[in-house]
Image (cartoon, one colour):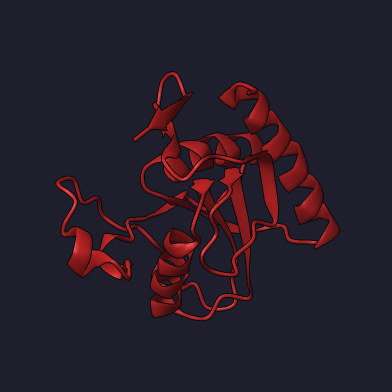
Length: 164
């Protein structure tokens, strides 16, 4: 498997090209806590975006909240008050079932209706449960049901394959 640094370089190049192709010059970048924020920080810096980086904690928007309960470290959501008609780059580390992205979009729409959402993920893995696909992804993984990939960091960023 490639290192997170190589994946980040791939994401940066692909995202620059996509923004150019779609003629988007002032996007709002939003990282999903926690790994998505680490990746978004890198991309935000590399793209030299003017708008401050925004963050989402989707804990209260998850559809399995009542089943899994509260995570011990809930982080705050920091979005500008106005996302109406903004082009948003939504960043996550690993796209698996699609439920985290669905929850993130629900939270974003509580702030307004964006013009578009570009989904950027470091990795996507097998096991999708919802019809959500990334616009930009650096790598694809086929994992067994009992395997998970975890991004740890922020310094250094590393990928860990875990077997449950």
